[in-house]
Image (cartoon, rainbow, N blue to C red; front, side, top):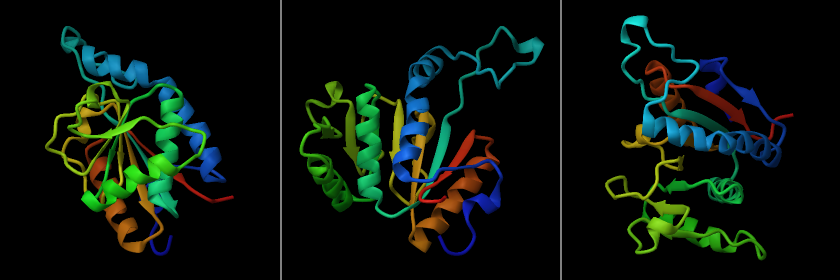
Length: 204
């Protein structure tokens, strides 16, 4: 990635040698904790990192959305499909947010053709089967979603509903304009004290 990297903004990052290894290591840990995250969002359970003031212990504090930045991604669509496939293998639920209708259509097609042997169950948001489908594809943020476990953001904007999800994955390509937009989102999230991690693809 040319120019300033997100890692230059903060030291809160991890590096992985390859996309496949990074997905296996990070997502496996993510989905192991997804059940706890869903419960925390429903019950307002306090995270170990969020110890309330003694005077306010009778109140519950909702867990903050965790945000993972995956940068230096050569192909965002294929990467998102692999992420969705890995999540589905552990029965996690995912919403894939596309930039526009054209990208959503391309993402839908890529999910069908990613593998000749793997079936990745997915439908567009608003589909009659959405409530029972683990992977939702959409380019709109004003639609009703059946679950808010994991959000994979392929856009260059901050999703207006990101805080409703337990976990958000920000996918940033090698394109400089995309990287610049990603850096802006990273800074904005950090200013709001959201828990952040940063993974750089294809680095040894």
